[in-house]
Image 1: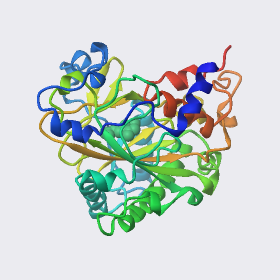
Image 2: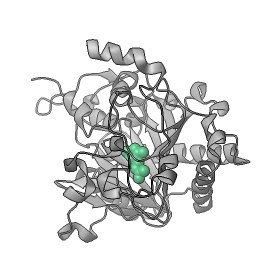
Image 3: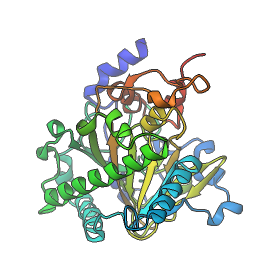
Image 4: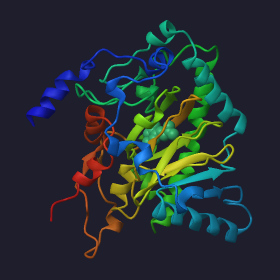
Length: 367
Ligand code: OGA
Ligand code: NI
């Protein structure tokens, strides 16, 4: 407890001066700072399998015929999503209804933001209090080993947290693009929530209601992974599960980097064109009483190309208790987790940074 109090006192500022990884990438051409070097067990090279999983990929699911005239097509799509949620915790969707032009425009506008002069970005420098703005680390532990990435974090929902002044004002017109992107993704997440609810054997609105109905949270983290002279020694983003509800990732269209855990292997995701990569977060693991689990993932970097990704987090209302949905709690399957609000829950990652699945695992009710 003492440790937690000490860390929350620190929340208004970072424990060490912030160094932008993008600047490091420009100055370090043949080595990386000690503080970015991961223990050898965490490096990609030591755990990546080059065996049977070489061509493996997470499932790609086409939503074109969802809710169309053919009910068999719809139920086949639901089944594919159900299997992917159980087997992988991850899948890609194509023909999802979000315009490919908007997707490209959102990603390329963010890329242009990261290519603006440092002074223009620094005016949005964030603090660990809300994380909103331009940042370079997760967690406030002094001396922590850092990831090879910078990011920008902003809120869409609830409306009370959305603040255009905390969004970049340049490149010109970017706020309109990011607004439209957020609206479209909230819609798509709403459709997927219904499907997940039905697939869990629930009425279609149950999961959304458990999230707080219309009062859900939605935020975006744009990840910028600069080129790295020693990619084998570090990670762009350390292994973690997403703390929120569901994540919709728009990956880079040129450069791979996301790896998903499958048993003891790490599978490098091969994104389909104009796909979103969907994954289950810890809050859906809790609500589904672990029928669905949030799966660990991480990002590797490389020495020849930067990578930009947009991670859109669809979260429960932050101050309502989240616990296993009552229909999924039975004498045979008692509730695995106690109730906790998302505000309480996310303090962990905000203070300690990405730590595999340690948080949701540690929450399991003692029995
Ligand atoms: C994240 C994440 C993956 C990526 O932001 O939580 O897992 O490919 N990003 O950038
Ligand atoms: Ni993630």
